[in-house]
Length: 241
Image 1 (cartoon, rainbow, N blue to C red):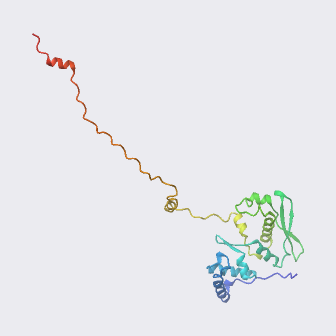
Image 2 (image 1 turned 30 degrees about the vertical axis):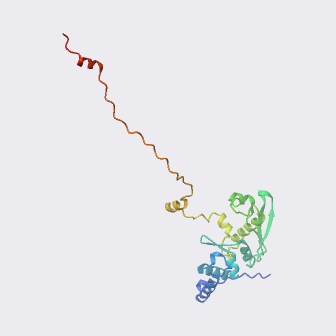
Image 3 (image 1 turned 90 degrees about the vertical axis):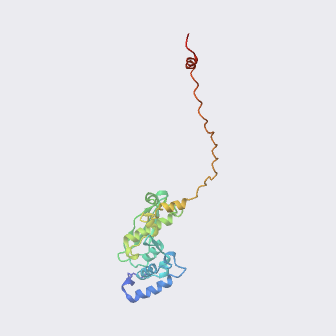
C-alpha cells in the first residue's frame, strides 16, 4: 500500500486560467439533468463543487452527487467522507468495533497510523447517545430502522473530524447539520393579508336570508281619562234651596 500522504492542489480561485476553465465546465454541468437540483442553473454552486473536487483530487461528478447545500452550508455524505479518508495516505482504512445491545449498543471507529503503527480509536457512539441527543426520535430518522449502519456512519464522521479533518476540509455530513440543530426552520411567517387570502372561504358560510320581521301594529290613540264621579255630581247639582 502506498503510504505517501496526498498533497492537495491549490484552489482554482487563485489561478486565472484554471478559474476560467472551471466556469466553462460549470456552465455545462449546470444544464445537465444528472446533477442534483441545487446545482442546476446555478453556476456559482457548480464552480464551488468543482473547486472542492479539484482540491480533494476526486471526480467532479462524484463530488456533486454526494454534496448537499443546507441553508448555505455545504455538507458531504458519510460515504464520500470515508472514501476521502481511506485514500488520504496517513491512516489505514477505517474499521469498526461493535459491542453491547439495546441502548448500550455502541460503535467505535478506529484506524492505524501508518507512520507510528499506533491504533487510534475515535469516540464511541451508542444508541443511548442517539436518544439523549435527540437523533433517534427525529422525523424520518434511520436510527430506528438501520441502527448499526447509523452507528458506523456517525462513529466514522466523529473519527474523521477529530483526527483527519483535512481529508474533507472539515465539512459535516447532512445528518450532523440536522441533528446538531444548526439547521433551523426559516419559513417566513405569513403577513396578515396573505393569511386572509389563504384562509378565505375555507369554512362554509350560511347565506340563508333571515326571515323578514313581522310588522308590529301601530299604536292607537291613548284613551281620554274618564271624568271623576264626585266632581261630575258637584257640577250638575243646583243650589240648595
